[in-house]
Image (cartoon, rainbow, N blue to C red; front, side, top):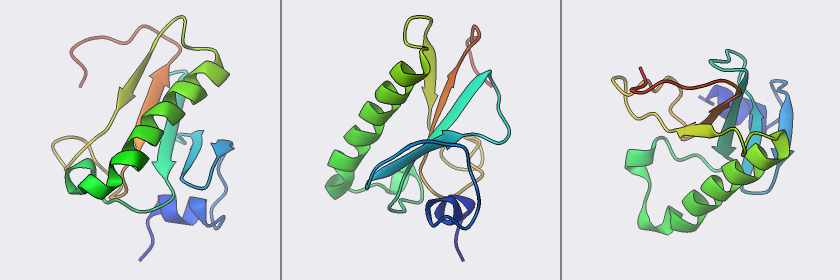
Length: 113
């Protein structure tokens, strides 16, 4: 059974896509938690960060660089942004497909949660 992200990647579910490469896709979250809330999702399924393998290291690095590029494109690098990766139910994971949340557009408190 495909996750919602796999369906978005396959074009089966519409999304507000910001950018797409062969390795990742960035789109706006449908339930934003900040004025800017973008998801950066690898096109290849890695269920969660704790299941990534050494062979995924290049892809993981590319996801962080993608987040940097999307933040720059959206104009939030000066004011600041937060990157979040959830793992497991206590970590807030709701979709078993690794993804990075890029949150920006307002002051973000600490600690999160």
